[in-house]
Length: 178
Image 1 (cartoon, rainbow, N blue to C red):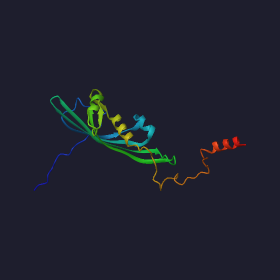
Image 2 (tube, rainbow, N blue to C red):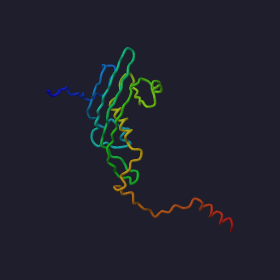
Image 3 (tube, rainbow, N blue to C red):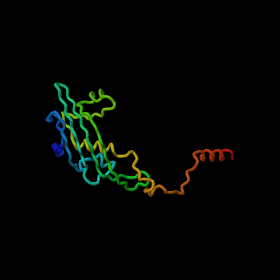
């Protein structure tokens, strides 16, 4: 039999905002890179090295008055963080795969089941930069640490001896007994 030829799924460049009022039924794929200059919240936790790679798939389903918009995708960026153990630089990859349901209000978010992650799109628009920054922030580890074999702070020793918490009371008792 002859080989099967199918059109490749093409990706559109990333727009600054996703305008859901302009999207028709079906799946819309976007791919591109974003610069991190517009991500001040991420800069507080980690310094991204290079651009942020973003892939989005927006699935729009409208039937009568019912509308459902789902966003799935992946963001990734190389980043430098501070190791909590040795306070040195820790290089790593921040990446997040996500699936979100677009809603228009917080009341609608409260009505969703717990397993569904909502994203609020005010006036039917959502900033791609803000979405990517939010997902990268969720990918930052709670405690950033080098591997034990690579961390210079793992064998750190100190000559400081912590005094016993009741030592002050013992001294006061000795003075009182004299």
